[in-house]
Image (tube, rainbow, N blue to C red; front, side):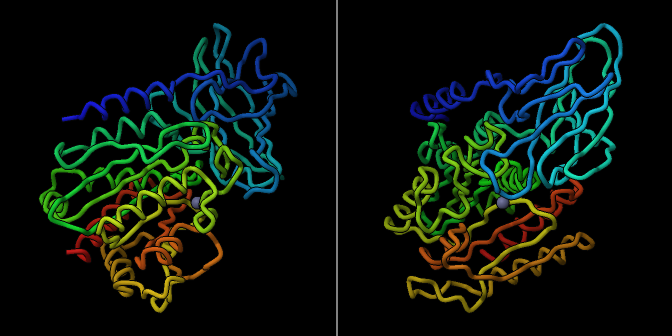
Length: 389
Ligand SMILES: [Zn+2]
């Protein structure tokens, strides 16, 4: 059962996240072909026609000198009645091949596109039947609306679980979360994702992890009666909306802001967690989902001494967790790397220093097989529940 406040929130969230927007790239409408980005997550800066059926598409970051992860997502429309084959060259200052091109007819099914690489360019061919439109993107498109609908679809125990908003982003988008409360327990796990908008493989891992955690499987049903859960799948809705390469709408890397807490997004989350602990809650474990070149878990060192002087609880637990994941997934390559960076402002460091709890940065390889992403996420959940029992 949704509460009244919940219904109001959900409709407000939906209103704030229209599927179509007025986003527009520069000079991207041609006689026979049009490139558009009038949808959330869309990103393409400007276009040039360089020859018969040849187009150069330019990608620009939201700020100079951020990490080279050019995100792109656009629709291509064949304006003619006949089939056309076109050559597309994506151009970015560096790193353009981090995200390999994929195509979809708008049905959420994505196909890899064969491509070749040049210096700061990525080239591929596209054949479109007459009067059709296809979506091209660096990874699957998962937008803000999807997260909100997804969170409400997870609710299994309506008396205990609800969609809430932790606060609003710089541009006023709600930070939607699923809060699962168990009266008899003071223990919490915290799950967050999408601090960096284009890190979609990390997002896929979180979606699978969350779906299993709120499924009908007896082991999770039992777990949900013992643990409180906060799930915030989309920490950076402004960045996701704009198709940013890395930053929030305020031009800040959120995962460097957890020490100084200058952003409304990090402040909202920090306030929530501090209140939860003040009210007697104990954070047992936190996971922050990301993507990078390989599968790797960044942990806190076992002997880390938090700034607060309070030693980390269960310092060995995270290593037992990883060990069991490795056993369960067999051939999928996983790595882990302990490290403490007290000045870095990353989330796992914040959780250790503020709450003496272990948090992990769960990085998924950009090009990992989608089935393997699910396999690791499932193993991560099973192993976590085994550790927390
Ligand atoms: Zn990241």
